[in-house]
Image (cartoon, rainbow, N blue to C red):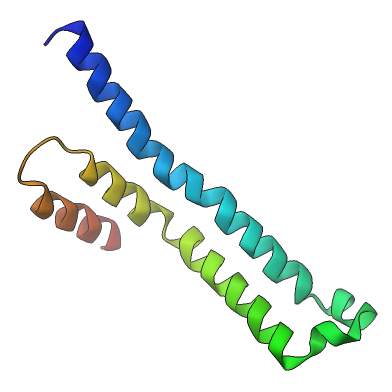
Length: 102
C-alpha cells in the first residue's frame, strides 16, 4: 500500500466520522430550544408559550434531540460500518448495529 492509497483511506474515514459530529450540534440546538421554551420560568413569564400547540411542538423538539443524543454510539457504529471498503458491507452494518444495541 503506497502513501496515496493510505491517505485516501484516512480521508474517507475522516469524512465518515464527520457525519455523526455534524448531527450533534443540530440535536443540541433542538434540545436547547425544547428545554428553554418548555421551562416553567419562561412559560410563567410568557403565558402564550403554555398554549397546547407550542407545548407539544417544543416537547417534540426536545424528544427528537433526546433520541439522537441517546443513540450516538449506534450512529457512530453505523457510520464506521458504512466506511468499510469491502463489497460485502451490508452484513457488517447489521453486526455493528446489533453490537451497539446489546
